[in-house]
Image (cartoon, rainbow, N blue to C red; front, side):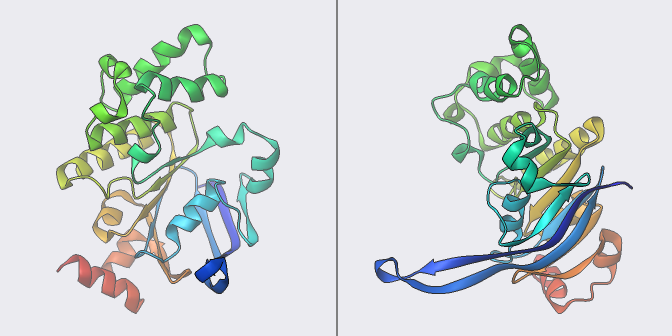
Length: 258
């Protein structure tokens, strides 16, 4: 498959502030990360809290900058594109863990979805409502949802709106940062199946962040295991799940069966 992203030697260190905002130390969140993502695949990044997976997601999404290294998107430096080409933002979208924190509580669903469509000029103003209704139907919601506020929705419905907000921009890459971790198991399955269905229909590439090895097994084509800011294992999911090499990966399997 054709390469769409190349992560080159990405490192990120956070400063730790102590009493009176004095510097008390550093945390090396990422340490020289290398990997590639192929167009159309679902790559799962697995690791416990503090492994660096969300930091990496935010760097790919352009929300924070790395201390060193770069990311190549279709042959071009991604962070350079973020600085000079606003159109690149719609090509790489992110779905967060808790959509309630990313949806404006004063915005109805129509407002939340129409704003990015208008900003990025996806369709003309007179076609915006039709585009919103079409996208809501793609995520399993009806037209009546355009008049609802976030607090009127269930957790699963809010996550569907977050997915709609991402796909309405017609991206090529979607970063999913633990998008099901706050949901009941039955709703998790619905959201995962929805993501796979949309990925296939829209020919998307997914970078899926999770701490749950069972979810990674279900949704991914390939897996990268992160521990303490470093890659400890990488490969096709069938190979890793059948014969994990890293002791850390084995501990994740053991924890998932408890």
